[in-house]
Length: 426
Image 1 (cartoon, rainbow, N blue to C red):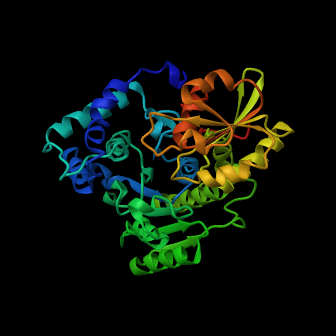
Image 2: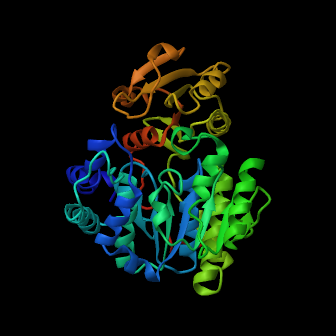
Image 3: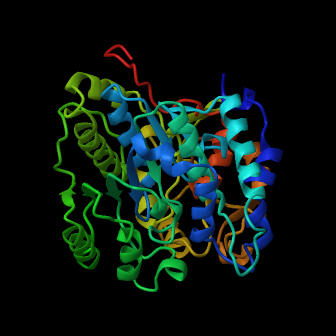
Protein backbone atom coordinates (compact mmCIF):
# COMPACT_ATOMS: atom_id res chain seq x y z
CA UNK A 1 0.00 0.00 0.00
CA UNK A 2 1.35 3.43 -0.93
CA UNK A 3 0.64 6.75 0.75
CA UNK A 4 -2.13 7.60 -1.74
CA UNK A 5 -4.11 4.58 -0.55
CA UNK A 6 -3.96 5.54 3.13
CA UNK A 7 -6.72 7.29 5.03
CA UNK A 8 -6.87 11.06 4.61
CA UNK A 9 -6.32 12.83 7.94
CA UNK A 10 -5.93 16.37 6.57
CA UNK A 11 -8.94 17.76 8.45
CA UNK A 12 -7.76 16.26 11.74
CA UNK A 13 -4.23 17.51 11.08
CA UNK A 14 -5.61 21.01 10.58
CA UNK A 15 -7.51 21.19 13.87
CA UNK A 16 -4.90 19.36 15.95
CA UNK A 17 -1.47 20.39 14.69
CA UNK A 18 -1.82 23.49 12.52
CA UNK A 19 -4.57 25.41 14.28
CA UNK A 20 -2.45 27.59 16.61
CA UNK A 21 0.16 28.26 13.93
CA UNK A 22 -2.51 29.36 11.46
CA UNK A 23 -4.03 31.71 14.04
CA UNK A 24 -0.86 33.36 15.33
CA UNK A 25 2.00 32.94 12.85
CA UNK A 26 1.72 36.54 11.63
CA UNK A 27 1.54 38.11 15.09
CA UNK A 28 3.61 35.82 17.32
CA UNK A 29 6.22 33.04 17.34
CA UNK A 30 6.62 29.46 18.48
CA UNK A 31 6.63 29.03 22.24
CA UNK A 32 9.04 26.56 23.81
CA UNK A 33 7.52 27.07 27.30
CA UNK A 34 4.09 26.25 25.87
CA UNK A 35 5.54 23.17 24.16
CA UNK A 36 7.03 22.13 27.50
CA UNK A 37 3.58 22.35 29.10
CA UNK A 38 2.17 20.27 26.24
CA UNK A 39 4.84 17.63 26.87
CA UNK A 40 3.84 17.46 30.53
CA UNK A 41 0.17 17.10 29.60
CA UNK A 42 0.87 14.01 27.51
CA UNK A 43 3.31 12.48 30.03
CA UNK A 44 6.26 12.57 27.69
CA UNK A 45 9.05 12.71 30.28
CA UNK A 46 8.13 9.36 31.84
CA UNK A 47 7.60 7.80 28.42
CA UNK A 48 11.10 8.76 27.29
CA UNK A 49 12.86 7.45 30.39
CA UNK A 50 13.78 4.17 28.67
CA UNK A 51 14.54 5.50 25.18
CA UNK A 52 17.92 6.65 23.86
CA UNK A 53 17.61 9.88 21.87
CA UNK A 54 19.75 11.15 19.01
CA UNK A 55 19.09 14.71 17.84
CA UNK A 56 19.97 16.29 14.50
CA UNK A 57 20.70 19.99 13.93
CA UNK A 58 22.27 21.92 11.05
CA UNK A 59 21.38 24.12 8.12
CA UNK A 60 20.89 21.43 5.46
CA UNK A 61 20.96 17.66 5.13
CA UNK A 62 19.41 16.90 8.52
CA UNK A 63 16.78 14.57 7.09
CA UNK A 64 19.37 12.44 5.29
CA UNK A 65 21.50 12.23 8.43
CA UNK A 66 18.45 11.21 10.48
CA UNK A 67 17.37 8.49 8.05
CA UNK A 68 20.82 6.92 7.77
CA UNK A 69 21.32 7.05 11.54
CA UNK A 70 17.99 5.29 11.96
CA UNK A 71 18.97 2.62 9.44
CA UNK A 72 22.29 2.02 11.24
CA UNK A 73 20.50 1.68 14.58
CA UNK A 74 17.93 -0.69 13.07
CA UNK A 75 20.80 -2.84 11.76
CA UNK A 76 21.69 -3.60 15.39
CA UNK A 77 18.28 -5.20 15.87
CA UNK A 78 16.78 -2.33 17.84
CA UNK A 79 13.28 -1.00 17.21
CA UNK A 80 13.78 2.60 16.06
CA UNK A 81 11.60 5.68 15.79
CA UNK A 82 12.40 8.49 13.35
CA UNK A 83 11.05 12.03 13.21
CA UNK A 84 11.94 14.30 10.29
CA UNK A 85 10.83 17.82 9.48
CA UNK A 86 9.19 18.21 7.05
CA UNK A 87 7.98 14.86 5.74
CA UNK A 88 8.97 13.47 2.34
CA UNK A 89 5.60 13.98 0.64
CA UNK A 90 3.18 14.78 3.46
CA UNK A 91 2.81 15.47 7.15
CA UNK A 92 1.92 11.81 7.63
CA UNK A 93 5.45 10.64 6.85
CA UNK A 94 7.20 12.91 9.36
CA UNK A 95 6.94 10.12 11.95
CA UNK A 96 8.06 6.51 11.49
CA UNK A 97 8.85 3.28 13.30
CA UNK A 98 11.52 1.01 11.80
CA UNK A 99 11.41 3.09 8.64
CA UNK A 100 7.64 2.81 8.11
CA UNK A 101 5.00 5.50 8.57
CA UNK A 102 2.56 5.10 11.43
CA UNK A 103 -0.48 2.91 10.84
CA UNK A 104 -3.83 4.65 10.40
CA UNK A 105 -4.73 3.73 13.98
CA UNK A 106 -1.45 5.03 15.43
CA UNK A 107 -1.64 8.27 13.49
CA UNK A 108 -5.27 8.92 14.44
CA UNK A 109 -4.61 8.30 18.14
CA UNK A 110 -1.59 10.61 17.98
CA UNK A 111 -3.57 13.47 16.42
CA UNK A 112 -6.56 13.04 18.73
CA UNK A 113 -4.20 13.08 21.71
CA UNK A 114 -2.88 16.44 20.54
CA UNK A 115 -6.42 17.85 20.43
CA UNK A 116 -7.21 16.62 23.96
CA UNK A 117 -3.93 17.85 25.46
CA UNK A 118 -4.28 21.29 23.86
CA UNK A 119 -7.76 21.66 25.37
CA UNK A 120 -6.22 21.34 28.83
CA UNK A 121 -3.78 24.19 28.15
CA UNK A 122 -4.60 27.86 28.42
CA UNK A 123 -5.76 29.33 25.11
CA UNK A 124 -2.86 30.65 23.01
CA UNK A 125 -2.35 34.37 22.43
CA UNK A 126 0.10 36.69 20.74
CA UNK A 127 1.81 37.02 24.12
CA UNK A 128 2.01 33.31 24.89
CA UNK A 129 3.10 32.23 21.41
CA UNK A 130 1.88 29.14 19.57
CA UNK A 131 2.58 25.42 19.49
CA UNK A 132 4.51 24.90 16.26
CA UNK A 133 3.46 22.12 13.87
CA UNK A 134 6.96 20.63 13.78
CA UNK A 135 7.11 20.66 17.58
CA UNK A 136 3.73 18.97 17.95
CA UNK A 137 4.74 16.24 15.52
CA UNK A 138 8.00 15.82 17.41
CA UNK A 139 6.54 15.56 20.92
CA UNK A 140 3.37 13.61 20.14
CA UNK A 141 5.24 11.40 17.67
CA UNK A 142 7.83 10.53 20.32
CA UNK A 143 5.10 9.43 22.72
CA UNK A 144 3.68 7.08 20.07
CA UNK A 145 7.20 5.81 19.33
CA UNK A 146 7.75 5.12 23.05
CA UNK A 147 4.42 3.31 23.33
CA UNK A 148 5.42 1.09 20.40
CA UNK A 149 8.39 -0.22 22.38
CA UNK A 150 11.20 1.51 20.53
CA UNK A 151 14.57 1.50 22.28
CA UNK A 152 15.85 4.61 20.45
CA UNK A 153 14.63 7.52 18.39
CA UNK A 154 16.34 9.87 15.95
CA UNK A 155 14.82 13.36 15.98
CA UNK A 156 15.44 16.15 13.47
CA UNK A 157 15.11 19.73 14.70
CA UNK A 158 12.58 21.95 12.97
CA UNK A 159 14.63 25.14 13.09
CA UNK A 160 17.62 25.94 15.28
CA UNK A 161 18.41 24.11 18.50
CA UNK A 162 17.90 26.12 21.65
CA UNK A 163 14.92 27.81 19.96
CA UNK A 164 13.45 24.46 18.87
CA UNK A 165 11.39 21.85 20.73
CA UNK A 166 14.40 19.55 20.41
CA UNK A 167 15.80 21.55 23.34
CA UNK A 168 13.17 19.90 25.57
CA UNK A 169 14.55 16.40 25.01
CA UNK A 170 17.22 14.57 27.06
CA UNK A 171 19.59 13.86 24.17
CA UNK A 172 22.16 11.07 24.41
CA UNK A 173 23.83 12.11 21.17
CA UNK A 174 23.73 14.90 18.61
CA UNK A 175 24.51 15.10 14.90
CA UNK A 176 25.55 18.44 13.43
CA UNK A 177 25.31 18.83 9.66
CA UNK A 178 26.87 21.84 7.95
CA UNK A 179 25.92 25.14 9.59
CA UNK A 180 25.78 28.24 7.43
CA UNK A 181 24.01 31.60 7.36
CA UNK A 182 20.41 30.40 7.01
CA UNK A 183 17.40 31.66 8.98
CA UNK A 184 19.58 34.51 10.17
CA UNK A 185 16.47 36.61 10.82
CA UNK A 186 15.41 34.07 13.47
CA UNK A 187 18.65 32.53 14.73
CA UNK A 188 21.28 35.14 13.81
CA UNK A 189 22.27 37.64 12.80
CA UNK A 190 25.71 36.01 12.37
CA UNK A 191 26.68 32.42 11.59
CA UNK A 192 28.29 32.25 15.03
CA UNK A 193 24.94 33.16 16.62
CA UNK A 194 23.26 30.49 14.50
CA UNK A 195 25.83 27.89 15.59
CA UNK A 196 25.42 28.85 19.26
CA UNK A 197 21.66 28.40 18.95
CA UNK A 198 22.00 24.99 17.32
CA UNK A 199 24.64 23.76 19.81
CA UNK A 200 22.76 25.32 22.71
CA UNK A 201 20.86 22.06 23.31
CA UNK A 202 23.94 20.19 24.50
CA UNK A 203 23.76 19.06 28.12
CA UNK A 204 26.02 17.15 30.48
CA UNK A 205 24.08 13.94 29.73
CA UNK A 206 24.84 14.23 25.98
CA UNK A 207 27.55 11.64 25.45
CA UNK A 208 28.73 12.45 21.93
CA UNK A 209 28.50 14.84 19.01
CA UNK A 210 29.10 13.76 15.41
CA UNK A 211 29.79 16.79 13.21
CA UNK A 212 30.47 17.41 9.56
CA UNK A 213 33.34 19.77 8.65
CA UNK A 214 32.48 23.36 9.56
CA UNK A 215 33.84 26.82 8.86
CA UNK A 216 36.51 27.96 11.32
CA UNK A 217 34.03 30.17 13.21
CA UNK A 218 31.44 27.40 13.55
CA UNK A 219 34.08 24.79 14.37
CA UNK A 220 35.16 26.88 17.33
CA UNK A 221 31.58 26.97 18.63
CA UNK A 222 31.22 23.18 18.24
CA UNK A 223 34.50 22.47 20.03
CA UNK A 224 33.81 24.91 22.85
CA UNK A 225 30.28 23.59 23.42
CA UNK A 226 31.50 20.00 23.62
CA UNK A 227 34.32 20.95 25.98
CA UNK A 228 31.89 22.76 28.31
CA UNK A 229 29.79 19.62 28.76
CA UNK A 230 32.51 16.96 28.56
CA UNK A 231 30.94 15.60 25.38
CA UNK A 232 32.96 13.41 23.01
CA UNK A 233 33.39 15.10 19.63
CA UNK A 234 33.64 12.98 16.48
CA UNK A 235 34.48 14.77 13.22
CA UNK A 236 33.32 13.15 9.99
CA UNK A 237 34.60 13.95 6.50
CA UNK A 238 34.95 12.31 3.09
CA UNK A 239 37.75 10.06 4.34
CA UNK A 240 35.66 8.59 7.17
CA UNK A 241 35.12 4.85 6.79
CA UNK A 242 32.50 3.52 9.19
CA UNK A 243 32.54 0.12 7.55
CA UNK A 244 33.76 -1.06 4.13
CA UNK A 245 31.45 -1.40 1.14
CA UNK A 246 28.59 0.69 2.53
CA UNK A 247 26.58 2.34 -0.23
CA UNK A 248 26.01 6.02 0.39
CA UNK A 249 23.92 8.44 -1.70
CA UNK A 250 25.53 10.64 -4.37
CA UNK A 251 26.13 14.36 -4.22
CA UNK A 252 26.23 16.64 -1.21
CA UNK A 253 24.19 14.24 0.92
CA UNK A 254 26.96 11.65 0.97
CA UNK A 255 28.64 13.29 3.98
CA UNK A 256 25.32 13.64 5.79
CA UNK A 257 24.69 9.92 5.31
CA UNK A 258 28.19 9.03 6.55
CA UNK A 259 27.61 11.16 9.65
CA UNK A 260 24.28 9.45 10.20
CA UNK A 261 25.76 5.95 10.02
CA UNK A 262 28.62 6.95 12.31
CA UNK A 263 26.23 8.42 14.88
CA UNK A 264 23.84 5.47 14.66
CA UNK A 265 26.69 3.03 15.29
CA UNK A 266 27.92 5.08 18.24
CA UNK A 267 24.47 5.18 19.84
CA UNK A 268 24.11 1.44 19.24
CA UNK A 269 27.32 0.93 21.21
CA UNK A 270 25.87 2.97 24.06
CA UNK A 271 22.56 1.07 24.04
CA UNK A 272 23.84 -2.48 23.71
CA UNK A 273 27.61 -2.27 24.12
CA UNK A 274 28.29 -3.25 20.50
CA UNK A 275 27.92 -1.76 17.03
CA UNK A 276 25.85 -3.61 14.39
CA UNK A 277 27.67 -6.31 12.44
CA UNK A 278 29.30 -5.27 9.19
CA UNK A 279 27.00 -7.44 7.08
CA UNK A 280 23.80 -6.24 8.75
CA UNK A 281 24.91 -2.61 8.55
CA UNK A 282 25.79 -2.90 4.86
CA UNK A 283 22.49 -4.54 3.93
CA UNK A 284 20.17 -2.25 5.88
CA UNK A 285 21.95 0.91 4.74
CA UNK A 286 21.78 -0.37 1.16
CA UNK A 287 18.00 -0.63 1.51
CA UNK A 288 17.57 3.10 2.26
CA UNK A 289 15.08 4.78 -0.08
CA UNK A 290 14.84 8.51 0.67
CA UNK A 291 13.14 10.31 -2.24
CA UNK A 292 13.86 13.94 -3.02
CA UNK A 293 17.63 13.69 -2.55
CA UNK A 294 18.89 13.16 -6.11
CA UNK A 295 16.23 10.46 -6.43
CA UNK A 296 15.27 9.14 -9.87
CA UNK A 297 11.76 8.56 -11.20
CA UNK A 298 9.75 8.12 -14.38
CA UNK A 299 7.14 10.56 -15.70
CA UNK A 300 5.54 8.80 -18.62
CA UNK A 301 8.37 7.82 -20.96
CA UNK A 302 10.79 10.37 -19.51
CA UNK A 303 13.23 10.33 -16.62
CA UNK A 304 13.11 12.78 -13.71
CA UNK A 305 15.70 13.59 -11.06
CA UNK A 306 14.27 15.24 -7.93
CA UNK A 307 16.44 17.10 -5.44
CA UNK A 308 15.70 19.34 -2.46
CA UNK A 309 18.75 21.58 -2.84
CA UNK A 310 18.33 25.29 -2.14
CA UNK A 311 21.89 26.54 -2.73
CA UNK A 312 23.90 27.24 -5.87
CA UNK A 313 26.38 24.56 -4.87
CA UNK A 314 23.53 22.07 -4.53
CA UNK A 315 22.18 23.06 -7.93
CA UNK A 316 25.61 22.57 -9.52
CA UNK A 317 25.88 19.10 -7.99
CA UNK A 318 22.37 18.18 -9.15
CA UNK A 319 23.06 19.34 -12.72
CA UNK A 320 26.19 17.19 -12.88
CA UNK A 321 24.33 14.19 -11.46
CA UNK A 322 21.35 14.61 -13.83
CA UNK A 323 23.65 14.78 -16.85
CA UNK A 324 25.44 11.62 -15.74
CA UNK A 325 22.17 9.80 -15.06
CA UNK A 326 20.42 10.85 -18.30
CA UNK A 327 23.51 10.52 -20.45
CA UNK A 328 22.86 14.06 -21.65
CA UNK A 329 21.95 17.49 -20.30
CA UNK A 330 18.46 17.70 -18.79
CA UNK A 331 15.94 18.97 -21.30
CA UNK A 332 14.14 21.02 -18.65
CA UNK A 333 15.13 22.32 -15.21
CA UNK A 334 12.16 23.06 -12.95
CA UNK A 335 13.11 25.38 -10.06
CA UNK A 336 11.20 26.52 -6.98
CA UNK A 337 13.18 28.44 -4.37
CA UNK A 338 12.06 31.46 -2.34
CA UNK A 339 13.86 34.77 -2.25
CA UNK A 340 15.39 34.11 1.19
CA UNK A 341 17.21 31.02 -0.07
CA UNK A 342 19.90 31.19 -2.79
CA UNK A 343 17.57 32.45 -5.52
CA UNK A 344 20.22 34.77 -6.99
CA UNK A 345 22.75 31.92 -7.02
CA UNK A 346 20.29 29.74 -8.94
CA UNK A 347 19.79 32.44 -11.57
CA UNK A 348 23.51 32.97 -12.06
CA UNK A 349 24.28 29.24 -12.27
CA UNK A 350 21.51 28.61 -14.80
CA UNK A 351 22.65 31.35 -17.18
CA UNK A 352 25.20 28.92 -18.56
CA UNK A 353 22.78 25.99 -18.85
CA UNK A 354 21.23 25.26 -22.25
CA UNK A 355 18.16 23.46 -20.87
CA UNK A 356 14.74 25.05 -20.76
CA UNK A 357 14.54 26.78 -17.37
CA UNK A 358 11.14 26.96 -15.69
CA UNK A 359 10.36 28.59 -12.37
CA UNK A 360 7.46 26.98 -10.49
CA UNK A 361 5.69 29.51 -8.30
CA UNK A 362 4.11 28.31 -5.05
CA UNK A 363 1.56 31.09 -4.61
CA UNK A 364 0.13 29.67 -1.36
CA UNK A 365 3.52 29.34 0.36
CA UNK A 366 4.26 31.38 3.46
CA UNK A 367 7.82 31.81 2.15
CA UNK A 368 8.86 34.96 0.22
CA UNK A 369 8.75 33.82 -3.39
CA UNK A 370 10.21 36.14 -6.07
CA UNK A 371 8.19 38.30 -8.42
CA UNK A 372 7.72 36.95 -11.94
CA UNK A 373 9.93 39.67 -13.45
CA UNK A 374 12.88 38.56 -11.31
CA UNK A 375 13.11 35.23 -13.17
CA UNK A 376 14.64 35.62 -16.67
CA UNK A 377 13.02 32.56 -18.24
CA UNK A 378 9.75 30.58 -18.28
CA UNK A 379 7.33 30.74 -15.35
CA UNK A 380 4.41 28.53 -14.33
CA UNK A 381 2.22 28.11 -11.27
CA UNK A 382 2.51 24.99 -9.14
CA UNK A 383 -0.87 23.78 -10.40
CA UNK A 384 0.54 23.52 -13.92
CA UNK A 385 3.59 21.34 -13.32
CA UNK A 386 1.69 18.07 -13.67
CA UNK A 387 0.98 18.75 -17.33
CA UNK A 388 4.58 19.59 -18.30
CA UNK A 389 6.57 17.20 -16.11
CA UNK A 390 6.50 14.35 -18.64
CA UNK A 391 7.57 16.36 -21.71
CA UNK A 392 11.27 15.47 -21.45
CA UNK A 393 14.04 14.31 -19.16
CA UNK A 394 13.96 16.83 -16.33
CA UNK A 395 15.71 17.98 -13.19
CA UNK A 396 13.29 19.14 -10.49
CA UNK A 397 14.96 21.13 -7.74
CA UNK A 398 13.92 23.38 -4.87
CA UNK A 399 12.46 23.40 -1.39
CA UNK A 400 11.38 20.23 0.40
CA UNK A 401 7.76 21.38 0.12
CA UNK A 402 8.11 21.70 -3.66
CA UNK A 403 9.84 18.35 -4.08
CA UNK A 404 7.16 16.76 -1.88
CA UNK A 405 4.46 17.98 -4.27
CA UNK A 406 6.34 16.61 -7.29
CA UNK A 407 7.01 13.28 -5.58
CA UNK A 408 3.30 12.94 -4.96
CA UNK A 409 2.63 13.51 -8.66
CA UNK A 410 5.22 10.85 -9.48
CA UNK A 411 3.66 8.39 -7.02
CA UNK A 412 6.99 7.97 -5.25
CA UNK A 413 7.09 5.15 -2.70
CA UNK A 414 7.60 6.74 0.72
CA UNK A 415 5.71 4.40 3.06
CA UNK A 416 9.02 2.72 3.96
CA UNK A 417 12.42 4.39 3.79
CA UNK A 418 14.54 1.41 4.82
CA UNK A 419 14.17 -2.30 5.54
CA UNK A 420 15.52 -3.33 8.97
CA UNK A 421 15.45 -6.99 7.92
CA UNK A 422 17.30 -6.47 4.62
CA UNK A 423 19.67 -9.23 3.54
CA UNK A 424 22.40 -9.39 0.92
CA UNK A 425 19.76 -10.23 -1.69
CA UNK A 426 17.76 -7.03 -0.96
